[in-house]
Length: 219
Image 1 (cartoon, rainbow, N blue to C red):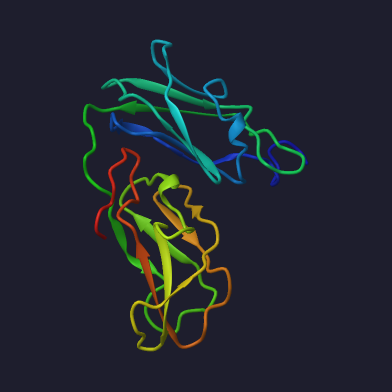
Image 2 (cartoon, helix red, strand yellow; image 1 turned 90 degrees about the horizontal axis):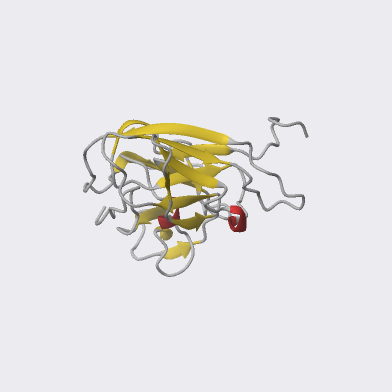
């Protein structure tokens, strides 16, 4: 394939960006394929202050990206993020197209939890049996807090049976989570076709957190 082509490995979503950025935020990057986390390092991912000082912290992996937790940023400062030499997990690993961006901090922190932006899709009657679940939030979400496996998964789907349905229902297996480019939402598909004329319930755990690690709490 040619560099920059449709098969190129690249960054598809990133945070923070722009101005008046909260001092507490993590740096988050999403990619268009699963990431080889062994290549995510302080050498390949750099955050540099306007005076040339490099800021370092710790990485948390997600399927198609990572979160970089750093000490609080300095107020009213300019930063540059650069990503290079990160590879994917394909049979013939691809190296990411170099990505750089800048942001400017404000003077404030963020203690407000994220909230779901209504309505959650799908909702209502006569929904397609393979329609994805799509949820948007009021702010950027940490991808590592969006999970679909295990008893404590933060995203769960339940089949309540024939309409109108009876709680608690049977849990339905979900596929992998796909983050929106804005990092303010996600899409996830059921692993198979849903039964016709049934009622379903989506639950989101309060552990879903924003880029400043504020949990959502009770939806």
